[in-house]
Image (cartoon, rainbow, N blue to C red; front, side, top):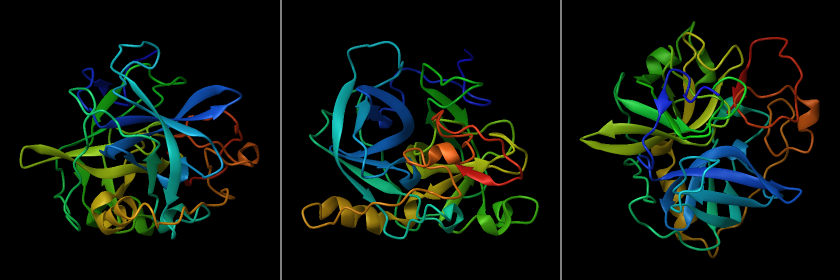
Length: 289
């Protein structure tokens, strides 16, 4: 097994201590489907396309090697799933690919488990700003056992939305990273885009989709939900947890949903670690990761 993100490398253990492994239960076993970010002791930020309200979920914190227990890990159940009310799984390019998971208990913060820092509301970082994607996504045909990182310089909105790149598919509530040899891939979905600003890393993106032509196709950088566009929503949901209603979503008809009951009838997403759909891709499109 190649131990690397596309164009990346294995991260130092617990060097991204807010990284979350999001897993669902099936027939008594847990399966990695996406990543996430611990933003409060009992709240995890991830992508809407990663979750629905019908499954049983858990998160692993302090994780590095999926197949080896270091004693630093914390396993916490998800008690509620909050998906943005404007999310439409039939129209991924409309945006709003964001969800919050309320944990059944609070994480214990230590050297291995820490909170990710969110950017100020509305902040836009410059072109080529230093960022890293992290996750256990596919390297070739298998997920990586160890957490990987890849350098993804930001691509500004003007470039990413231009003809020959993503065009109108990319909205100003999204942020692009990479577009060359580095990229996110299967299993990285929902995980953070960690961007350096004033000497500190902030979670500026939530991994959302890439081109179906490949995880690192030229001029098709990985697309992320721009976190700074949703700070008010994040604060509203996580601070009003007693009154906030739990919003679910239906299964995707045109885009692969990792927890969809109809996934076997859909083309397989190249970036979601789920083997239930394996139809070939007839045309270029884009897929949630």
